[in-house]
Length: 229
Length: 405
Image (spheres, rainbow over the protein chains, first blue to last red):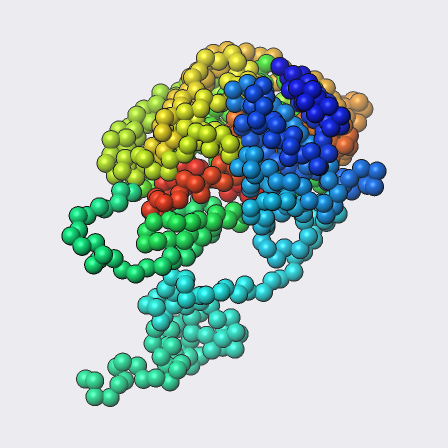
């Protein structure tokens, strides 16, 4: 069963299958990046292979083997639900080289390709949503590359600017909630009334809650409006 | 949840002009197990789009593995799926053993099965219990956790720790089984069964529970396979894929057990599949306890892989050197790469390990089942109500440590 997968691939693609191996029973075929998507699509569509069950896509970094060989190995693992066999498809890409996405073949490739991009910086051409997934957008570098030191410190990042805040749900005193977004500048300058009402009063600040914004703007509070009672 | 369909004479009169509202759910939310963020686009209470953003618990598992010895991966592996750490330990052990090309003695394989199945029961109890609790059923949750504590008591007697055991070793286990293990397991099984029945009586015909699980969060079979979903989630859609049956490892081919499958792939089916899997785990436990030999070696006897016994370390120069080499340099698997997979609590937990022949792993890739199961959550949530996120997300059983690594 197991040899049949590699034999079938070699019969179909011939010299395009650069290397095959079966170390410890794991069938592996290596292809060029240009054949990556075509071989993957064949694995899925062929009636003898039917590799319909997506398993994983990952990468390995070999900085020391350049320039004889490209730097990264990208590995696809798939199995067949009906035939119960597996294969490991591998390709080698340079730093900065884009690889065809496999999302049209297996939708499950979406998040794993994003993770490979996140951790190794390998981009996938035609991927519908090429964002970082586990790390944040402002992260500098790609942590699973061998040249990324494990104890590297990341820079502090600015607060993100959110467009059209009005579209967000009601939040803050003016919208009927008793707390507000934290105004760090005001907190540093001692104008903040949100830390603790007791401390704020001691420091001569005015009450938190919804009246604070009214006071801050110099408007009279409802109970101070003359002639109300 | 069921939408309230009212007969109105003039529907447009009651329609308020709305536009999609964007709502953040998480990363710190009681229903978001661990930490995960969902950005929802809502039309009223209907989910029109959802962007699931994992990663708040990312601790660099794979990077950390690349700086120690192979044996030093175990504490990290414990903290992947911290609800069933023994299964991760066993999974990683099997991966490295496959790379070296050894098999552990039979008694060790049975021991791993027993501890692993206990961990699987604990895992499913937590998932089902927490899922029920989020729907307001606090009593079954407490019952389930009571049982889980009994199981953890056994694991604590065996390993010395309740949760993060770090008990697996390459080529064996840290310690041989205690003398009371078999009796302890046999004593606990009827009680687990009793609590399962009680909790089923509380939940399965409960109107609130049924309304909020049946027909909610439906997962289609073909899509699930294409997305790489595994474990109880895949089986709930009617696919009988279980690694223990499809690719038996660690003597699982010797046990007589069934693979429970669901029909609709909804939350209710996932709950039932997990419940039934606990029963099957108990069947495996009974057989494993009966079959496990009482004496015999636990570890492979190769001082290049396992630490030599302490009396040899202290009294012979060979033992001292072997101990020193293993501690300072670590064991050195041959150059190569293997992918080894086991059935963990959430599904197909794979380790793709690459060795460059030194004592340090070159690359340890963990294929996290719930990361890949979570990717499909968006399809399960679209056009459902916002309240359905809680049971649907609960039944996916996302474990932050494993998802974000």
